[in-house]
Amino acid sequence: MDDSATVDPINPSVPPSGTGCVECESSGGWWFHLRRCAQCGHIGCCDSSPSQHASAHAGHEGHPVIRSFEPGEEWFWSYPEKQFYEGGPALAGPQHHPVEQPTPGPSGRVPADWTEHLNG
Image (cartoon, rainbow, N blue to C red; front, side, top):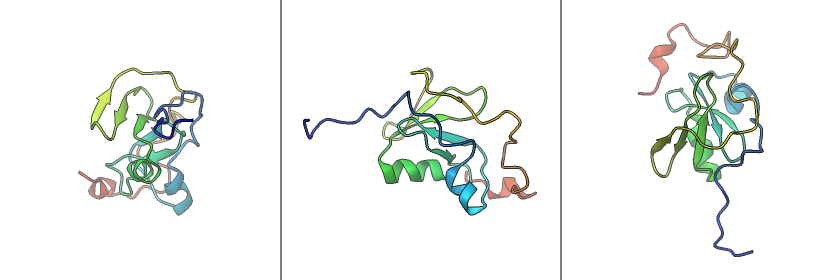
């Protein structure tokens, strides 16, 4: 294989890693919105969330494209291009977190003053 070959940043066959941010779930944190790595399926919290795990995952792993993991949102974001894209390949399901899961979430861990903890 040619060493200069690149890995496709979108792998439609990989399912999401779960229904919530992997790191927030393990640390007892909370998130505002969820993002899905289009390459490996990792679910992380958005850049408005206190911990910004989706961006951290993209930077650490070199996975440049995410997709929203929110109900009703099907857009992709390219970190290198700083560009939104509507449409794109269908990814393995589920396409979003469970609709009964609150936003922000998860239930029971979101502080009452959560809006004051968001990143602008």
